[in-house]
Image 1 (cartoon, rainbow, N blue to C red):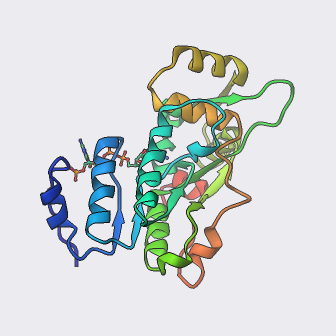
Image 2: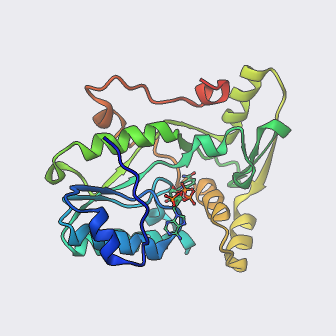
Length: 243
Ligand SMILES: NC(=O)c1ccc[n+]([C@@H]2O[C@H](COP(=O)([O-])OP(=O)(O)OC[C@H]3O[C@@H](n4cnc5c(N)ncnc54)[C@H](OP(=O)(O)O)[C@@H]3O)[C@@H](O)[C@H]2O)c1
């Protein structure tokens, strides 16, 4: 049974009432770091056994550059210090947000255009992991039903993994329309982003993608999470085809 409760994240009493008898706290809030901390603190006060912080994106712990995403680490650090089992789930890019038009990420398929940040010097184009929101939800459910003591601190998942060029080729095959694939040099992109010190998260997503830091294709918890469940991870082709 689900109940929808409105809460004020600035009011600990209201939060405590809302979380009474709750064992698992799943934080799905957007980029509201103060509210993340309030929710984590309330999870501790109510005696929750498991806290899943608001992540569901790139593993910012691996970034080789400063980024506004690093603020996400604080919620996990704090709840671990409080002694609550805390599991960070990293999924790369949400395919529902990028396909067909995550133009902020350089993908604009309705306008038949992709701009990929790629390293120079003939190095291979980086692969990027994309996961559907439905699969993130399934992964959360799979984590939440297990005994907290059996869980790792960090889980990577990857619905499907490919280069942006391959993503464009999938689109071409499925829709029979051509896509123009442009590339932006990683070194100059990196310099531009870091010199500007922008707060635009998308720039850091693209930079991490260009550096190959969003590829969870070969090392992830997919099969562990979906074992024993009738669950097929959604592919990029299925997302493009609207299935
Ligand atoms: N990997 C990716 O491609 C990707 C893309 C987008 C987001 N994400 C991540 O997914 C997570 C959720 O992001 P989202 O885009 O779903 O977030 P969002 O749409 O910005 O916000 C989600 C919910 O946060 C609540 N909220 C709004 N203002 C708030 C405030 N001041 N304090 C506390 N809560 C507030 C609202 O809940 P109510 O409606 O109940 O008030 C809102 O529906 C984030 O960690 C984000 O970084 C990842």
